[in-house]
Length: 328
Image (cartoon, rainbow, N blue to C red; front, side):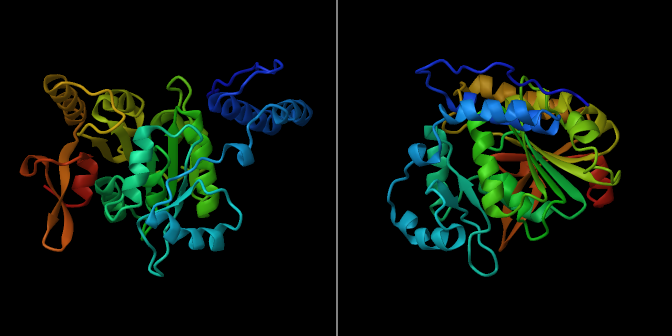
């Protein structure tokens, strides 16, 4: 098994103020100690952590008391009792008219994250193109791996789709996001099909997940994977960590973001165009064809990328998937 790197030391000095990253790293280390057969060491570290960590009661993040927020408070209380008010309901609803899932705000929510939450509480919703694509493409023969999950709008969409993905993985390098995703998975009741991984120094890739960390869950060799790489500049690295799966025909689609948004390091037009061209070329030489979602009458359809402008998400489909779907 490929070893993931966790801190082996932890700052317990008197008066130290723990960051969310430190708390999250220590909690992951505690779990690793327990499953590795060192419960006493884990208990000792937990006692030390308990005296320092800023637990939920003292760190509940607040959200502006908008009309939308007040309207869902009753539903949250009914579904989750005294859960902290960091839970945000999904804009997408079940057939019974209740939110399909909830997300949880990290303690250190950024402006970009708060902007996404604001969109989710509006009628538009956060990441609508990606979520619409997932609702359309997913079947019980597809897995979904998200390398830019944020607090889980897309990953939780995949886990609660009309036909949910058979397995959902959210992979984040941000400890505060990992903790928020764990809370959302539990509160949304999707822990049986959704896994959350902390990506330390790029150690978690598609190939590592399929051959090692999820070997017991990925035993069906016919199962294909839909990957979300995140921003265009991340595509080459994600593809590099997926080459075995691509070679074996396991990757059905790679979705990636072709627009800049709040929180990105904003690039000039030339630099951004270069990143988009680079992402498209890397996937193109590996046999992927690029599409975008478009509104056609009352339906959402995949159309060739060149046929639309202004799209936020590019959907790159593998030649194997296109062949099986009889798409030319």
